[in-house]
Length: 118
Image 1 (cartoon, rainbow, N blue to C red):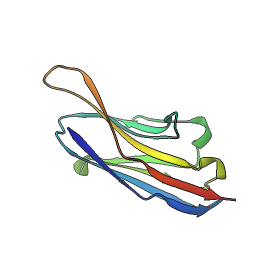
Image 2 (cartoon, one colour):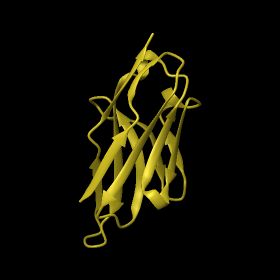
Image 3 (cartoon, rainbow, N blue to C red):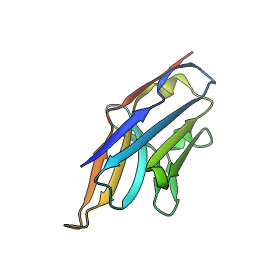
């Protein structure tokens, strides 16, 4: 199993910034991708794939930056120019390929609340 510990959520005024962190621990073999999702529908916000490729939701491009520290198995989401519509619970996601059965397994953090006031 892989455990994910998130931190960095909170309350901020519109135009402000927050930085989310997510550290992975446990049975880590070879992480394929790390990312952030938000809301009940868990829509993709940003992800970073092994090799460094990044993908962003159109709504956050130019404002959010995802980065990854492979040595610490940690992913960060720097959120700038926050808007009230960014308010949501943000979930960290990590997926890796099992060396036992070759399947891709997804793991989720507990979620961290981000609230942007107008």
